[in-house]
Length: 66
Image (cartoon, rainbow, N blue to C red; front, side, top):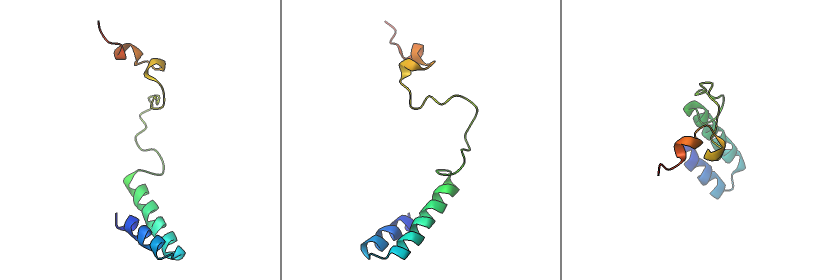
């Protein structure tokens, strides 16, 4: 969060070099946290994150039992 605050402060001061350095720190932190960079959680299962439930194997579980 400190790096993100530094980005904001650099933007307000219109200091492009400080902003560039702060953004690099934010990027490094995100990579270290696993938010950017290579996928570390891949278990080989298909990713249905951006699919409608009706278009996935989970569709039968989503239907209400009546």
